[in-house]
Image (cartoon, rainbow, N blue to C red; front, side):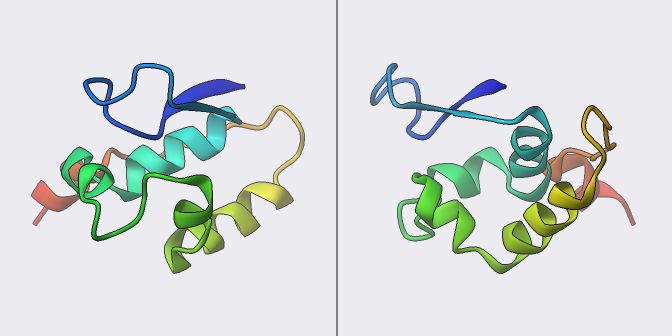
Length: 83
């Protein structure tokens, strides 16, 4: 389990949610820091993250993984730079 900051650390250092490592990697793989900070996207809550279609698909995939299995995920910014 890892802590994910739902708000930027400048706003609230204690606004964290404990989530599994694979979900945390997926969040930062799917969304850039700019997207996570944008209040219009609503990604600053667990409900907002789970309401995103791509995140729902990823969570469905993660649930099918064997316990202890790890997956590889590129960071969102690295994926966008790729041609």
